[in-house]
Every structure is written in structure tokens, then in C-alpha cells.
Length: 112
Image: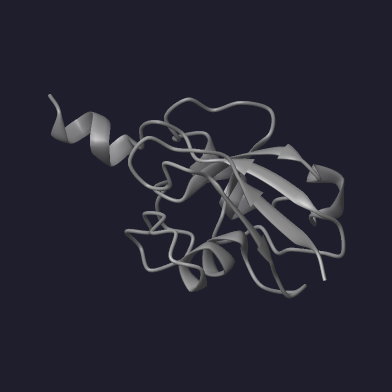
């Protein structure tokens, strides 16, 4: 089974976490099942950007983002080439390292 490594995040996962996960589940679901409360305002329906993550290692093992995901990623705060919506990124057979961005679009909006 692949290993999902979540890099430390100041609020969501201060110590970081390494978990063994099933192939075929989304990064978001794997994180939530392992007590990493990644934000997912649209309930994982690919209708927002709050579950945005950076895939620091293992991007090649994920299926390419579909058009709807790409459209929402364009709106994500802090978009990078390795950005994905964790609700849409399905874990394959390789290990992954992800980083949860410091801010989501919701956090930025709420602070202004």
C-alpha cells in the first residue's frame, strides 16, 4: 500500500503525518480518515478550492486533472505547477508527499 506523507502545517497538522493508504481513494478522503482535517467546503464535489494541496512527490502516479478541476485550480490561492484539489486527486500505487497551503481562498477572504 502506498504511503501518504503530509508535511507539517501550522494549524491543520503541526507535526506532519505519515499514513499507509489504500489505492483508489482521494488524498482528501485519506487525510480525513486519518484525523487530518483538511478543509473541503463543497463536500468534495469539485466546486471550490478549499482542499487545494501541493503534491511535492509522486505527482506522476496521479491521473491528470480533468477540465473542471483545472478550472477551479485557476482560482486557488497560491497556485503552483504541482497544485491539485485533494478531493479529485486519486491515490495510485506510489507514495505521495503533500503540502497543505498555509492559506485557502476562504481564509484570505475571511481575513479582509
